[in-house]
Amino acid sequence: MTGDDAQQIINVTRDFGDRYAEITAYRVPTSDRYPEGIKYSMQYGNAAGETIIRYDNFPDHPDAAHHHKHRTDGTVVDVDFDGL
Image (cartoon, rainbow, N blue to C red):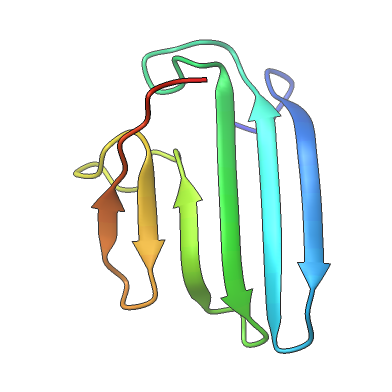
């Protein structure tokens, strides 16, 4: 959901040589998947493009909680979220 119904509100990437940090967020229509009206990703990775850790609320893992964390080993862990 990054078409006309989404408005990017944050897009920041910082390069640290062998590591990087990236934060993106979109204001989206409120829905069951995005009850806060925000779609986000916060990622820390290495120069090879591999995820070290990432937090997001993308629906790409149907068994994961609405808010979840991706680990280096590829596992996805639910994250408690009390709201905005």
